[in-house]
Every structure is written in C-alpha cells, then in structure tokens.
Amino acid sequence: MIGFEGGFHGRTLLSLTLTSKTHPYKAGLGPFAPEVYRVPFPNAYRGVTAADALAALERAFHTQVAAETVAAIVLEPVQGEGGFIVAPQEFVTGVRAICDEHGIVLIVDEVQTGYGRTGRMFAIEHFGIEPDLIVVAKSIAAGLPLSGVLGKAEIMDAPGKSAVGGTFVGNPVAQAAALAVLDVFEEEGLVDRAERIGETIRGRMLSWQERYAQIGDVRGLGAMLAVEYVRDPGTKEPAPELASAVAQAAAQRGLLLLKAGTYSNCNRVLCPLVITDSELEEALDAWEGALDAVLA
Image (cartoon, rainbow, N blue to C red; front, side, top):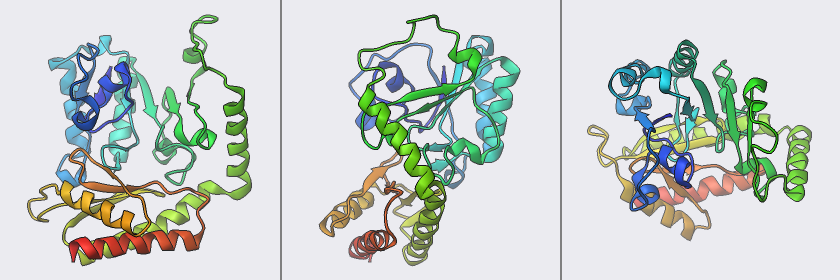
C-alpha cells in the first residue's frame, strides 16, 4: 500500500499505519503493519508542486517498493487532518494514470470530504477521474455509526459469500438514517447549499488574511475550509500556539473550533450543511472576535 504525507485514514492498526501524523495519533502505538509506504503530497503553500509529488511517487517504485507488488494507492482529494490541503488537478490525474499503468487500485478516502462537504456529493467529482474504490463514513447517517465502501463491480463482487462481515454490519437503524440523509440532501439541495456556505466562509477568511499577517494561507473546497497560522509570513514557520489560542478564544465566545495540519497550526471548519445564514454569520463573528483578541 502507498499513502501520502499528511494523510489521515483512521486509528485502528492498518488505517493508523496509513495515517501520517505522529502526535496525537501514532506516537507510542507501534509496531505498525509492514509494507505500507508514504510519499509526499502536493502543498503549494509549502513549495511541493504536483510535479514534485508525482516524481516522488515514481521514484518510490525504484527506491521503496516495486510497482508490481503495490496493491493500492490511498488518496484524500482534500487532506483532512493534514490541514484541508486540496490536491491539484494535475496530481490527481497523474496518480490515476500511474495506477492504470501499473495495475494498481486507486482508493479515494472520502470519509471527511464526502456527502456534499466540498460542493459536490463526492470531492473526487471536482477532478474528472474515476477511482476504483471510495470509502465513506461520518456524514452518511447523520451521526449514527455507519461506514461503507463503494466501488467497481469486479472488485466489490470479488470476495465470496460471507467473506466480508462484522458484528455490527447492516445495523438497520443506521441504514434507515442513511436513507433519510439522502432524502434530505435531495429535498433541501444541500450540495448546492455547501457551495454557498463555502463562498461566505472563504470571503470572511480572505478578509482576515488581509488584516493579519499571521494567517499565511486560506484553502479548501466548498464548505470544507481552513486557515493556516504562521509566526512569520516570510519564513512560514508554523504557529500551532496561535491555532490553540484562537480555538480557546472562540470557545469563550460560544464557537467550537478544531485544529488540523501536520504541525497543528490550522483551524478548520466543517459546519452542518443545514446551518442557517444567521447561524453562520454568528459563528463567523465569534471566530473574527477570537482572531481580534489573539492576533491584534
């Protein structure tokens, strides 16, 4: 298996092996599974281009693992815990081509990005390529525990009867919730709503970036957005203490913010897609007040 620096794919043994970030996820929890390899992910703000990342992937076939022995490459279209870093079109297209060339399964992790977060039902729709498998969870059942794997028939039908199972597979209450979620998406136009939410949030974030040099980058797709804090805009030295301080100041104003990023120096936002305009403005005002308190 090949994953990417900055990737997050879960906290059980195999998924944690794929996960990149050490603290707070991996430290002290080894040994991890063998034969999982990691290569750079593009990050324009940090100077890693799509061409750099694709070259590193190709180089890994000569320095780390033979291409013919790679079962799958696992990709987030927008890195979640990595700091909401959007994969460039050139990179996604290139990874698909590499997988096709070598007979490698391309798995797209849409656990965070799926179900309208980026202004498409699935984030991979932004890129015009078709993965072989898509993994989903989180938003699909409105908070009830449910996850799934979607994929091409020749892969999904390959395991024999009862080859895939588990104690809680097919929970009927969670399944009913998942069907209801699809109805709400259609009835309330939540995919389009995500695009409008994102435009509002991005506009405010860009205004904050103009005001404060410590906000080095604003990025994301649709309603899946983050800001990255730096101590100095020239050196781009990560400032995790600012992300923590802003989150604390926001909590004092009634807004819960999470941190993200390889260096924990980002604040990210994944608000409910059913949020009202007034609730969204109230939340953004609280965030702005927190920024004023910490960065001014």
